[in-house]
Image (cartoon, rainbow, N blue to C red; front, top):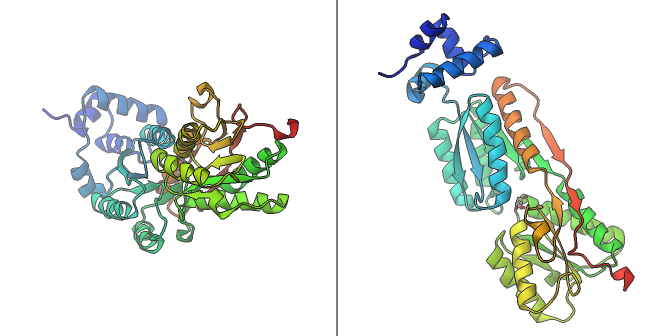
Length: 342
Ligand code: RIB
């Protein structure tokens, strides 16, 4: 027979309403008793009837999580830290993978509303259809469902966000290359219009201007956050001219792999012919034949903070919006040559 709230209450000698508050993450239950109630519910195999609970409390305890590419280690790690933080507070999540596709994101936002999620944590794939996405995101706060952007932002929504200092990180990468004697620097930026690609490009040009450097149009390699597409676009650029950059900044981990593959196929050595710095320090970067100099993003901290901001807005809908900007860290390895020594 299914365990009910009153069975747990009887076993612990507390009222059913105390048990319900503890299981629905409501205030008014001391932490030790809450922990005991949750443990007893697990022992009894109690499963919240989400729909019965929704009819009574209008709360599902479910958060919508919108991610552009769960196959990318960066986002997988981000999901894990978000999940852990939500779980500790009794919330579950439903994950929507958009494949960096705005139309899918629109559909998933509509689904989230019909699923009755209590809030949204999102890495938006917005690039050219920002208006339609914005109009959909606006529906959430209108029904008291907080939205928190992580990694990327739709700024005009005015919602909370947790992001990297993309401009500062890209600026630092250019400065690092310049100090190593590189004046012909290109970027592998990924898709135009995507928040992180555009902000990193802004930081790139800000540093070029400050240093009095120029960048040829063809050295700004646009495309997708994809290994294969990047391999093709980097090959095309380097085949076209002998006057190629001496250094490339890849705006994400997948594109760095594509660039390495292209340069290898072209017989160009890293770092002797072309130096590389990439955003996203991955665990395998230090083990590569030429270990990759990377800009590490505080992924776990980003996820914990995004989930914590959402939870606090669930508890206090009137709370002030959070604008969290975290610093990247340049991890120096061996993929950048020092031309000043030559
Ligand atoms: O690899 C993931 C990183 O690259 C994220 O910052 C994402 O937005 C992309 O820019």
